[in-house]
Structures are given as C-alpha cells and as structure tokens.
Amino acid sequence: MKLYNTLTRKKEEFKPIEENKVRMYSCGPTVYNYFHIGNARPFIIFDTLRRYLEYRGYEVDFVQNFTDIDDKMIKRANEENITVKELADRFISEYFTDSKGLGIKEATVHPKATENIDAIIDIINKLIEKGYAYNVDGDVYFRVKKFKEYGKLSHQPLENLEAGARIEVGAAKEDPMDFAVWKAKKEGEPAWESPWGEGRPGWHIECSAMANKYLGETIDIHSGGQDLIFPHHENEIAQSEAANGAPFANYWLHNGYINVNNQKMSKSLNNFFTVRDVAAEFDYSVIRFFMLSAHYRNPINFSHDLLLQAKAGLDRISTCYENLEFISGSAASGECDADVKAELDALKQRFIDAMDDDINTADAISVVFDLVKYINISVTESVSVGTVDAAKSLLKELTDVLGIEIAKNREFLDEDIEKLIEERNEARKAKNFARADEIRDMLKDSGIILEDTRQGVKWKRV
Image 1 (cartoon, helix red, strand yellow):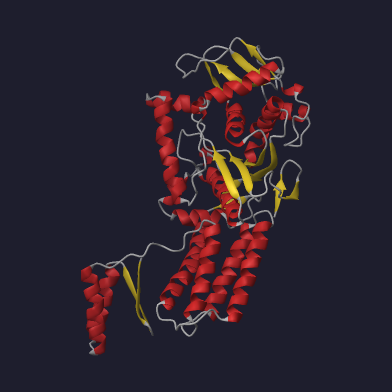
Image 2 (spheres, helix red, strand yellow):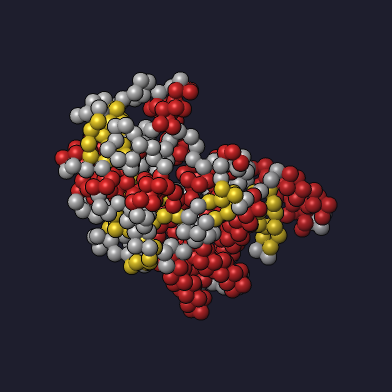
C-alpha cells in the first residue's frame, strides 16, 4: 500500500510503527456552526482510509478532535447570549447527526480542547523550558525561527512564509512569525488557570497536545484539508517536535480543495452550502458517493448536476444489489460457479489494487461499476444460489469499505397493502385487467411500485 506523503512530496510504501496497528490523527471541526461541504470532504476521505486500513487487517486508533474554544466561537456565543460550552455542545450534537448520515464512523476518541487543558499546559511548559516559547504578560508565543526545520511540510523557505502569512508585528512578540500557544484572558472570554495566569489555548497547540496524549509522541498518519498545511499543520510539527524531540507524524495526507460550480466556495458568492443544506435535497449517501468519485488529492467541483449524476450511479449499484436479493429467493441450490468466482476474485483484486494506490477511490468505484455490469449480465435467475450470494457478498463488501450504503433496511407493507397486492394477483388470474390496473395505480399513489417478474411480483417504495 502506498500513500502520498505531503512531507516528502512522493508516494511511499506505508509502514506503520507497529506491524498491525495504525495511529491516526485527523483534524476535526470548530463547532460553532453546521459543517459545510468543504469540511465534509476530509471527514469522508479519511474515514474511508480508516475503513480500508481496518479492511486490510490493521487495528486503527483514530483520533479526531473538536475545537470547542476559539475566537469564532466566542463571537457567536456572545451574539446569541449563551456560553461557549452551550454553543459547542449544540454543534457537536449536530456534527454527529450529519456525520452519521454520511456514514462516518465515530473516532476511537473525540477529544475536546477544553477537556485537555492540562495536556496543553504540559506541552507549553516543555516548550518554555527548552527555550522554544516565551511568556509576555500572560501571552505565550512559540519562537518559530528557533525551530530550524520550520517550513518542511509546506516546502517553503521561512522568508516566503513570513511574507505570505501577512502577520502583523505585535508589540509583545519577538518576531512577526511567532505565534500564540496561550492567550491571556480578555474581558468576557472563558479562561483557565495556568502558570502564566488565566487564559485559553491557541488553536495550533491543542492538536499537538491531544495527539501526544492519545496516540504518543510519534504517530503514523496525520490528515486534513489542503488549507491546513500552513500554518496549522506546520505549527503542529514545530510545537510537537520541539517539545518531544521526536518526529511528530510519519505520513501527512491532505485532500484537495472543493469548488462550487467551478468557483471557490464563499458566503460572498452565495455558493456556501452546509451538508445539512444539501442533505435536505439529496440523501447523505449521495454526498458521500460524490466525494469519493474523484481522487482525494485532486480538486473536485460541486454542482447540482454532478450530484444528480452521483445519485444515478448510486441508484444503479443499489438496484443491482436489490435484484440479487430478489433472485436469491428463487435461485436453485448449488455452490458458486467456478468461472463466476474467478471473475469476482479478479474484480476484488482490482479494487484492492486501486485502494492500495494512494486510496484511489475513483478507480475503486469504477471497479464497483464493472462488478455491477458483470452481475447484471452474468448473474441471472438461472444461476445457483451460491453464485448469487457470492456476487451479493462481494458487492456489499466493496461498498462497505467505501462506507456507501446500498442495502437499505427492508420495509414491510402494512396489512391493507398486502391485501391489495393479493387482490390484484387474483384479478389478473381472472383476466380482470381493469381492476388489476386500478390496484396498481392505487399502490403507486401510496408510493409502492410493482414489477411483475417470472418469479412473482416485486415491489419497492419510492
């Protein structure tokens, strides 16, 4: 398995620190609002990576944090006249509503910044002791230029980063590039006791502290959106490696940007959509399927038409699975046909090859479509139940790796509709086709679509 490492700018063979275990940290949301489709992409992509690692037999310790204290949260909480904690609790709950809909598994640990203040203070103390941080009237800053490898993730010399960051020279800071790891208390802000007085953590330090606390000094994979490479992840590396004297993460993975109708997403362009907005029209599973349809490192364009295409593709896969379930009920006994098994095994290997190549979900989905095409042509009513079940099992196996839901919970008709279906069958036997058509229309009005097949009546809700 190979992963593209932002740190080295090349694909590398993935070799975790422990043979059968992976330690993975992925940046989570700042919980002051519903998360938007740009946030959804890394959540979905790196959930898929986690699923695939587990599929390949690894035990994965997956940590995704909640930033539950920062300037945006304080501002919104004050606007709503509630506490920052009340705001955070509300949108953490809303996060889980959307993430569950998207098929995102809960992390092994979802740490919150405010519940890990001791760990944050501990790492800041280490930085001060080693001369990498300094206190100015309760504000603690990191000395960027003391960390000689600063810029190794973004692959930019310090002078370029300094110019691009547009960081104003603060009167208290020794250098314009120095950044806050602890902020002194201001009026109306939440604060915690520390050796430097009351205050709160800076944004970057929380991830360093929590990754260290829950995963150790050196982790296997750190992931997030491309926009986090600088300054957030660059600062995480500097803090962590300065404090611990050890590499922070061996593999850094970043997904590409998302555009909306070929334009950068922004509120000013009125093309800013939360996942909740989109889920009001499209099923969550369509959003996930769409996000996986392109390679994660490539930019992806988000539009209504492309979501419709994703829905059609997902429906095609789901219909194939439903057909297999239906055929299974009437298939003759027997084991899987040898030729079919060989073709299924070849398709499975192609899927694994695609995912082993830097989590190429686009190619993996192409394999799923090839599997669907093969099933539709080769797995019919005339084959054995073993053949049907093997095809159904592989289709479910591959889509489960991608976190795509195709097997919906079976819904049962109520007693009245069951009677109508039976009455229609009797009407057809009696050649009373007018009544049979009338019942079909009645059921259609109730959201029940009937399909007459050689094995009997097949129905589905719409």
